[in-house]
Amino acid sequence: MGNEQKAAKYLSVIILEDNDGDFVLIEDYLIEAYNTVKIIRCKTFDDFVELKETKTDFNFDLILLDLHLPDKSGIQLIEKVLSIKLLVPIIILTGYAELTLAKESLKLGAEDFLIKDEISPGILLKSIEYALSRNLYIKHIQAQNEKLRNIAWTQSHVVRAPLARILSIINLIETEKENLEDLMFWLKQLRISSDEMDAIVKKITEEAQEIQLNKNNE
Image 1 (cartoon, rainbow, N blue to C red):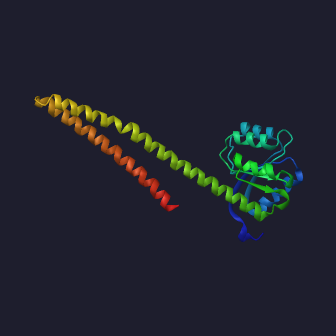
Image 2: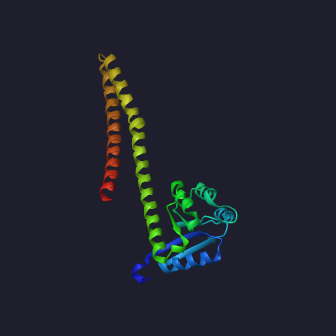
């Protein structure tokens, strides 16, 4: 692979692979595909769990997962890894005999699967870059959805508080309309509540515009 095909960035990856030959091959491909790569190997699922529990800086970009480890394999292994909820993409490493299982892993939440006999530095690089890009896009969408949920909560809860006060003040004004002193007091409270609601509406509008701007820039 020429240098022009290399991904000019750092990659940190955990490889769950018990076969030494397969691991060395994947390791060589990663080193060839990336300018800088940090590789952590786990031979068993228990090794992976122990690594997570003992390593203080457990930050990485990607998991490469062999479907058959000595202590767990197949669907059970995939589900166990996904249940840890590390929020990083998982690429399955498989053979021709497990193609059906590999395809099933996509439904469970894996980003991609690669057939070991067909892997090359270029294929591995494309799969990783796609998985990372898709994962980043999903996180972006989730962040936008969270903003929308916050806006909806504001509309349904925060706005109703000053609105309820305004309606109550109007009722009081209607009942105390002959008392000028009380009327001026309640008009002042009406102004305060109106200004509060105006500020809330402006904030909602700004957040909605920010989301729309982000969508237009995608």
